[in-house]
Amino acid sequence: MYDLINQFAQTVVSTIAIKPAHVTDYEWLLQNVGQATQPNYQKKYREYWGMDAAQLSPAFYTAYFGALNSARTNMPTLSSLVQALYAASARKKGQKSLQFSFSTKLLHMTNQRIPIYDSRIAAFYFFATPANKTLQRRINRFASFHSFLIGEYGRVLQNNLLATAIQEFKRQLNPQHFTDEKIVDSLIWAFVGLLRKGALMNRQIFYS
Image 1 (cartoon, helix red, strand yellow):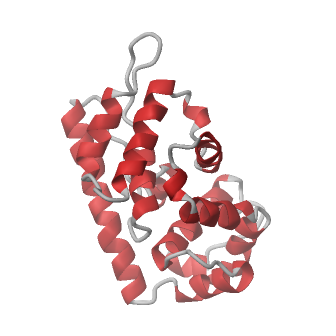
Image 2 (tube, one colour):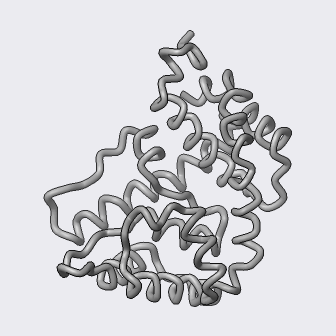
């Protein structure tokens, strides 16, 4: 699959390039993370990471951005952060949700070498979302997969498995504050997005 991303690097990166905010808004958020408690910052952050679609409560956002502000000087473990945000996630009917993806994004904003988890990354690596398990077992399963991502991204970079695509990303988008880990994340995210939109059937991407 890495070979396919390299082979069709121009196509993959072009899908990101048509939305320049993927780079510009991300870099603005990084440069202004010290404003995490400010409404304008929170609005842009929520838009960039697609948080509003999750219909989370004001109490969750208060806890979330408070954690983001604190993490700049005292980064929590991923598991403890997930548990804390779960406790603050109750909706009107008292239902709680495990927001693992947004937890990884929070930690990434304080250390840009930390991988981001989302459904596209999970799909690329055939990770099955844990269900019908206790909260702690679900967290442990997610955390185990995230540990795999850390090691796998390190292997990809050490062995230059996405070197062609990373170079194309830098050529087209000229990022100033993207780590190579974040570029790997962006490439996989865009690649899976293309496949989901029918890139194989319309021959944008084809197996060889």
